[in-house]
Amino acid sequence: MSGAPRVLVTGAGGYIGRHVVTALADRGAVVVAADRRGAERPAGHIDPRAELLAVDVLDASVDVYEASGAPDIVVHLAWESGFVHSSPAHMLRLSDHYRLITGLVESGVRHVVGLGSMHEVGYFEGRLPEDAPTDPQSLYGVAKDALRRALTLYTQQQEVVFQWLRCFYIYGDDAYNRSIFTYLRAAAEDGKATFPFTSGTKQYDFIRVEDLAAQIAATSLQDAVTGVINCGSGVPVSLGAQVESYIADSGYDIALEYGAYPDRPYDSPAIWADTGKIESIMAVAEETSSIR
Image 1 (cartoon, one colour):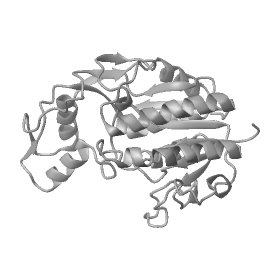
Image 2 (tube, helix red, strand yellow; image 1 turned 90 degrees about the horizontal axis):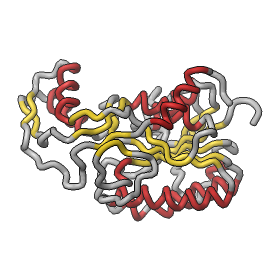
Image 3 (cartoon, one colour; image 1 turned 120 degrees about the vertical axis):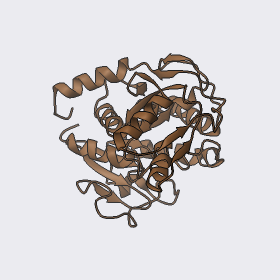
């Protein structure tokens, strides 16, 4: 490939997507930002260095490859109801995701990056390696795992670079997500004195959305490390400690009401990423600012 690669980012206006667009542009890529709500977004929501493509990429009537100007790489982030793990939309839209990616490959894309989730794995205790067996316990996890498996088989047959970025717990930019931090922020700004909470004892791998975006961008602009790649901090932190830290850092005057909600039965006492692969990618990315 000569010159800067042309990268199509689907779900570019979403919580993670808009940060990935910026991270890719910072690294010199030509970015096409596909966002079905692109015409409705406020100015500056998506980095202006990107070419905005205001289409629904899962609409079978749209030739996404042609509309996006024949991209070299696709970073597929678009996903409906990602914060609602029990939504039937995960399974109902599964074939649309598969059709989109296979269609792009058949048209000429030779590098596919998909966004995964640790919820594909199901119940697991400890440091999670990329090759851990999967046994998802939610419709969200089942759908992500099914797409990963299907695209792994397909891209192997097509000799296409395939990377599946398995994400953990993301925070930051809380005006645009639907995590516990978003709801806590809303409660604090509404003047609530307390916030109903779980036991807070379970430990997770937390990463800021900007740091995750940097990992996604660096990974997609190289092809030496492929397959499943964990994206996280590699450090287990209890949910209670993370949220208490968030309250203190934000200057909120609100107390957690521990035990008001039960812990989710499919969450383990502690799970965090084995980050060997992503650390090697980021080390190379830090050594050079050039595109491969």
